[in-house]
Amino acid sequence: MNKKISISRFSFFLLFATFLGAISFLGFVPQQQSFSQIIIPYTICFVIYFLFTFKIDLSLDFKALVVLAVLSRLVLVFSLPNLSDDIYRFLWDAELVLQGRNPYLFLPEDIVTAQNQALYDQLNSQSYYSPYPPVAQVIYSLAAFISASKLQIFSIIIKLLTVVAELGTFYYIARLLNLLNIDKSRIFIYALNPLIIIELVGNIHFESFMVLFMIATVYYLIKDQSIKSAGLFVLAIASKLLPLMFTPFLLGYLGVKKSIKFCLLTGGLLLVLFIPIMIGVANGTFLSSVGLYFQKFEFNASLYYLIREIGFLIYGWNIINTIGPILGILALSLICSLWFKNRAIIDKQNIFALLLFTITIYLFTATTIHPWYLALPLAFCLFTDYRFPVIWSGLIFFTYYNYSS
Image 1 (cartoon, rainbow, N blue to C red):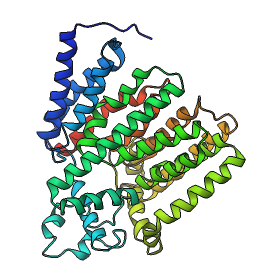
Image 2 (spheres, rainbow, N blue to C red; image 1 turned 120 degrees about the vertical axis):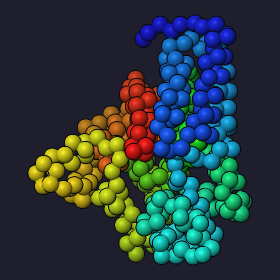
Image 3 (cartoon, helix red, strand yellow; image 1 turned 90 degrees about the vertical axis):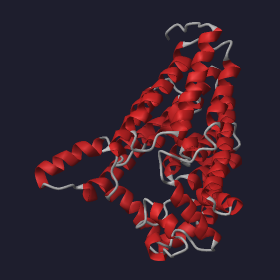
Image 4 (cartoon, helix red, strand yellow; image 1 turned 45 degrees about the vertical axis):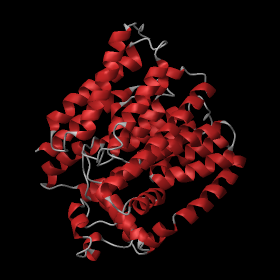
């Protein structure tokens, strides 16, 4: 471990103010296509984050950095998401729910009217059924109801709820660090990461709730409170479907007897929460959206891009329709293999490493990897000795170049 350096109070607060200013600029000024206006302040933020997290002695400034982590989120509450247009689909789905319609059953292009034409024109997914799970729909609908569907107020409410979720994540990270006898300053690996701040709060991606519920799930798992753990795991899955892939590792930690109760409770709650999606599955609409993800969407992929080039050379066209599902099966096989090799030794010392490897396998084989997908790896890695998600989070913002051309 490199020896940390001490800096003057003036230097510390200069870095503090610069970080906060750059975050504010990113939240209010650039548009998705403005690559230079995004990457320059982001790089400044990341360098300061790296110094605070790994290079500077924070023994005297711990509370000040907690304040910075909170302030850098609060300052973004009053900005409209400027690096993502997903908010319009959030509002569209919320309005359907408030009208008593199932968002998993209606394509926007099939129900556009003169009244919702303006919102429809802003959607980036007019031909797709909603992909957002139940907890997300509840939050969006609550925000739309309170705001009377006024976009600016709708955004503020979701962002405030996101900040609350982030504070909850800080709480459970701190409790886990203490429980595992890990240096408390590791919390800043997540709390000050500019990707987390910009994407989860600034652009209100729902990973904030998934991370909260997933970290809390493992906390109560280690505390041997399986009922709380199961309930929170259900909420994690109902926020984003990704946590489903962690199920075998949680069950491996619990052992056979405790796993039965955990599975019964989790399964029962999921059935209740996912009734709207199950209707969509029965009608084929929700599964069609999932299928599109594997067979049509591609962005910043890893292994897939290499295979795609081979496909162009052999067949002369994009073979994503075939390779997407195959890579999904490959990811599932690798994850199952990881579980099988470690099923007898899963404990509180290695569970986060196994969860980190699991999500990494998924991301390496996915056809679409947006920056905010790194939220879970970042949260998991701070409980391990692995730091590649930190470097990844610094580099992945360069993918915004794709929007500039």
